[in-house]
Structure formats: C-alpha cells, structure tokens
Image 1 (spheres, rainbow over the protein chains, first blue to last red):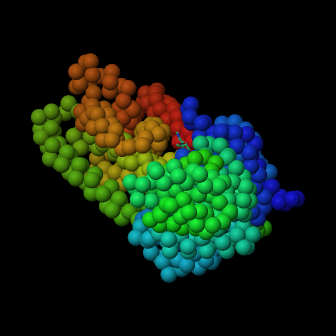
Image 2 (cartoon, rainbow over the protein chains, first blue to last red; image 1 turned 180 degrees about the horizontal axis):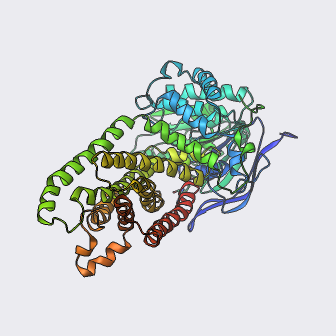
Image 3 (cartoon, each protein chain N blue to C red; image 1 turned 135 degrees about the vertical axis):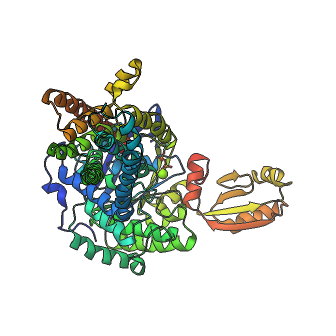
Length: 311
Length: 275
Ligand SMILES: Nc1ncnc2c1ncn2[C@@H]1O[C@H](COP(=O)(O)OP(=O)(O)O)[C@@H](O)[C@H]1O
Ligand SMILES: [Mg+2]
C-alpha cells in the first residue's frame, strides 16, 4: 500500500437511523487499484457504508473523503466518477438491455454516440451482446447482474462499488460474475465490494474488513486474517445426534487450539488435522463423518464474533 | 476501462446547490424513453375519454338540462361544462401522473435510485419528473381544448389561454402529490385519496353545476378547492367574461399551492433518496 494514492478514507464514520446505529465509528482507507471488501453477515452495516461511499446517504458523523472530495458538498462530482452495483438491481425490466444502458448513460450526460459505442463494448465484456435488443424482464438473475455491472461501467469510473455482487445467484452464475470482476481487477480498476460469502471475499479481495454490528472487527488480507485469527487446519466432526454432547465433552480434553461445538458439528482448530483425527480415535470416539480442511474466513468470523456469516 | 481522460458533465455543470436544469433534463429524458412504450394507448385514451364525456354530458344530459333549466346558465350546457372539464382533466392527469409513477420509481422500477447513483441529485430527479408531468398535462389538456373548440363549445378567442391555466391547475396538485407519494412504501392510501379527495373535488368544484347551487355550508369547501379556482378561470376565459382582479386571485391561489408543493417535494425527495 505504501505511497499508493488513497481514494477513500473514513475516520470515525457513523450512520444512525433514528436511534439505531447502523455504522458505528469505523475507520478504513482504500488505495487506487485495490480490491477492498466488507465481509459481514446481514445487518452488519455493509450497505449503509456503501451508500455513504456512493454519496447517496449523508454520514451522521465522522470523516469521509472520496477522491479527495467531500461527499456532502461534492456529491455530483464524486458520483460522476463512481460505478455503482447496488444490492438491488434497479434495472427497468420493461426496457431492453440496450435501453437500460442508454438511460443510465444519459444520467451521466454522455452523448448518445458515446453510449452506443461503450454499450457495445460493455455488453461484449459481460457476454450479453446477443441479448442487447431483448427486454430485461425475462433475463436470468445472473444476466441481470451482469447487465448491472456493464451499466456501472458506462461512465468509465475510477472506483467500482459492488454491494453483494453475487447474492442470490446460482454457483455457475456466480463464477461468471467473479471472472468478470477478476478481469476488471487485473485491469487495475479499484473495486470496493461487500459480501457475506467468505469464498467471494477470499477470491476477490486484496484486503478486507470483517464487519459485525456496525463495527469493524478485524482488517487485513484474507491470508493474514486467517493466519492471525485461525489455525492452519480445521477438523470437522459429525456425531450421531444422540452422542453429540457427550462426544463434544470428551473432545475438550484434546490439545487443540480451539474447539467450536455447533448444533450439528464439532470444529477442532489445529495445526495438523490428520494427527488430530488420530487423537480423536485414540479417545475411543468414532465420528459419523470427519473432514480435514484449511481454515477459511468463515472460521475467522466465527472466532471473532462467535457466529456464522449466514446467520 | 477506468480513469480515462473523458470526464463527464459535472465539471461543466453550473455551481453547487443551484437549480441545475440540465441535470433535470436528463431525468426528463428518462421519462420520455419510458413513455415511448405507452404513448399510443395514452394518446388514444386522451382523445376517446373526452369524446365520451363531452358526447354523453354535452349532447345527452345537455339536451335535458338545456330544455329544463334553459337560460339559467346563459349558455348551452356543453359550453358551460366544457371548460370545467378541461380543468378537471388537468386534476385527473395530475393524480394519474404523480402517485403511482412516483411510488413505482422508488418501489417497483426503482429508477429514482438508479438516477441518484449518477451525478443527479434528488432535486434534479424531482424537477425532471415534474417536467414530464407538465408535458403530460399539456398534452392531455391540449387535446381536450382542441376537442372543445371543435365542438364549438368556446365563446371567446381567450379560450386559448385556458391551456396554460389548466396546466397550472394540474400543477396546484402534482408537486404536492409527488412530495407525498415519494414518502410512501405502499399504494393502499392512493385509492382512498382518489375516492375521497379527487372524486369529491371533481363533483363539487363547479365543474358540472355552479357552486352557488351547493348547500350554503358546502360552498366554502368549494372555494378552498384548487379545482374550483381552475374551473372558474378556464370558464371565464372560455366564455370571454374574465375580469382581471378575479383571475389574478385564482391564479395566485393556484401558484401558491404549486410553490408549496414544490418546496415540500424538494424536502421529501431528498429525505427519501438520500436516506
Ligand atoms: N433506511 C433505514 N432505516 C432504518 N434502518 C435501516 C435503514 N437502512 C438500514 N437500516 C438498518 O441498519 C442495519 C444495517 O443495515 P445494512 O447496512 O443494510 O446492513 P447489511 O448491508 O450489512 O446487511 C440493519 O439493521 C438495517 O435494518
Ligand atoms: Mg446489504
């Protein structure tokens, strides 16, 4: 990060709705060319933060600087340089794919010829060229999401804001979206995204903050967060529901770094999962299933908050 | 794909805070694009609706009224009601354009939220949509006025001035309705508003009979009704009986309502779109 131009800077950023604190004094900085993520469960305050960065929601207090400008007084100038993929698509379903881009490009004051030229390029980029003249309504969820991504690029933004870019999409559609976002990242587009999918955060983010209850619980690269807040491996065990409690009690005797007893599974955080599994068997326990895997951001979140990302 | 030299319009836009009508025009153009889908049906109904009304009320009911009340109105019944219905058309257009399309813009289509992600501000979105409402008022009232003239139901060349007056009558309603509609999350209250505000105004604002025929206690209600002021203005223009003082009072009343609605809408749009 050292020396890179800071595009977004927040200090003590707070958003209140009435008495409810949606975002509580968060600090972060995002540099040009970075892919920066807000990872957290529903209600963590991710969208509220994104909307403040998108200059459509004035901060209640704290400092926020975007592209060196103040979102409260320079909203139009900042928004002219942002691309926004909101949590909800806000597409006009009765217009065609191309018309949606035309309407949106006009909001930015782009001449029709420029919009036409960019639309062709962008629809090619999101693999929707063959649907350009079709109405949006019947498109699949993944296609609509890709169209919103194309739309967000119509003004050639400095920063792309993506609020849960793949929520609600099936796995295949998600992978197409990830692939496109990855290409944008390769081209040096600054990405700011929110997600409650740990795999999405791991795949796309250079750096992320873990958000919960309107606060930032931790910050770092996915790898650094896992290193700091989890063990290299995790052993997941399932027992017969009848034996679950009893087995969990016995497992507390293991020399593991941490033990999480969930409703249906036991997670053992350890350096070497296979050795741990042998030790479990040594205790005379026979799990129904066992799985040794690497730690993920989900484990980081569990460690930090005691809850799951999709709770 | 990023950070290119092409910087879009904000740099060229007028200073902060001012009324950027160039931004409003961008929103207006969205509504034009949207209208391209439905303009045929809308134009046809703006012709057929008035034809039905003018035919049934003017020729049908009119022949009865003319025979029995002959002379009390001083003119034929058609000539009496036509300018009143012109003003009422403006009110109906305002209700039609300022409620569901506004709620849809935040709730169903969400085009307002798409717009404010761009340089447009809530005020630009409001002004742009209002421009489109003005266009729709002009179209519907223009067609209506042309039909009245074709029916020979105007008495004075001043009738041409009843077009801007009718638009102003619509504007006494539209901004206030938009200001309110943008705060809604459901449309349940819309039909209540139509049934218990619009329809009574339609019936008791002197459109079909002089308000002096209303029971005494109801007459003040008519004088508060923006529609009554619009009807009076349109009618005196159409009959060529306008007196300047009266006209000024009516117009000032309508303008004041339009201005109040406009100011309210600037606030409610900002609150809803920049939450
Ligand atoms: N406009 C609003 N009015 C009241 N509460 C809100 C509003 N927007 C969000 N909230 C509340 O703020 C909290 C954070 O919401 P949000 O930022 O949408 O979280 P996330 O995007 O992480 O799911 C939630 O509890 C939500 O109910
Ligand atoms: Mg959200």
